[in-house]
Length: 209
Image (tube, helix red, strand yellow):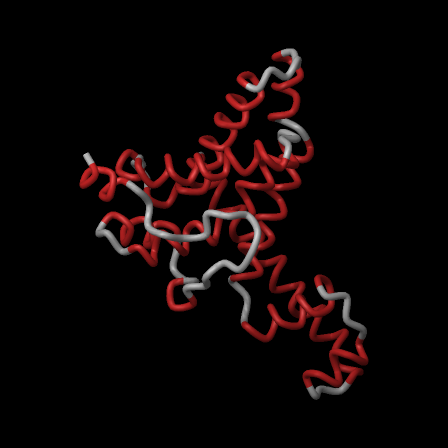
């Protein structure tokens, strides 16, 4: 029994929402499909990368999409990744890991709501599942994926300006580039980001048609 448990227990990864999460930089640029294929061969670092890639996504569905408490969200988070690891062989399309884990998360969130003694009509749960917050989670994750497809220079300057809220002067000082060129660089990177997003949308529409 113990041997069986060792085989089916996910390798040590980022199982806690808080704290440092290990980065597996050499695998960060691989597609979901390639990571899943590597997981099937028993490569634990590939699984760690998938958890790192989707941990915030899963947690956002729990807390923003379904308004779970931190405690319930943590429970769902742990259970989702454990189930995903144990059922990875059932995934028919290796490139469909994201919608697969999203569906698994939504189901577990509904279980948590119905099993937690919360007085909430089913129609309200259905509204939450299709809420604008869930749409925002999906949109934010799509943008994050698209940003990851940009050059390191574009990722850096967009992160500094939008995420860190750095001024032109600060960016200029830290990157040692003329302040007058920062606006044009940001605009150029945003155009690349838009093209990346449009390309992903077209690919998604083509695959679903």
